[in-house]
Length: 157
Image 1 (cartoon, rainbow, N blue to C red):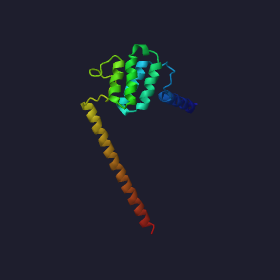
Image 2 (cartoon, rainbow, N blue to C red):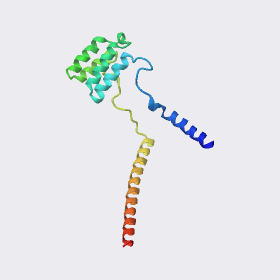
Image 3 (cartoon, one colour):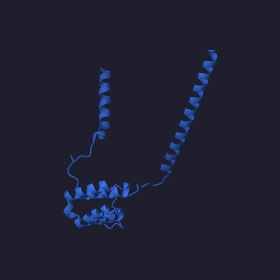
Image 4 (cartoon, rainbow, N blue to C red):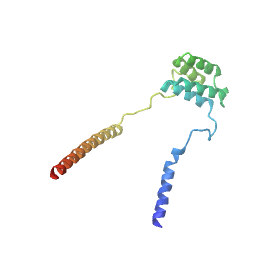
């Protein structure tokens, strides 16, 4: 009985812990707004330079809720710029379509913010020490295993 309860408890904890794995990005929450799709297009252009996906996001934004709040002429100009392979101009136009000045504000942060602190540096150093220590342990275990194999093979002769 105790084993069954313990097993059920472990399964329940694992199911709760693994629940985010089953989350998916369909529109179960609701439709994605035009401004979100435009920001995604900017991220695709600025991040991985994927103009095809950016075009699909822009075209979806033109049909999405909230498109009237954005500057559609600039969005269409951005599509033209993407077709001409001018991603810098497309990013600028998409940012302007959101009503933001691309010179003074970052629509999508291109680099993750990292703040160097004593804690971060200490954890990095500790991680490096553990990696080196693991390599030393593996090397010594392999060396001792070879010596044991060598000893057993010479004693059996």
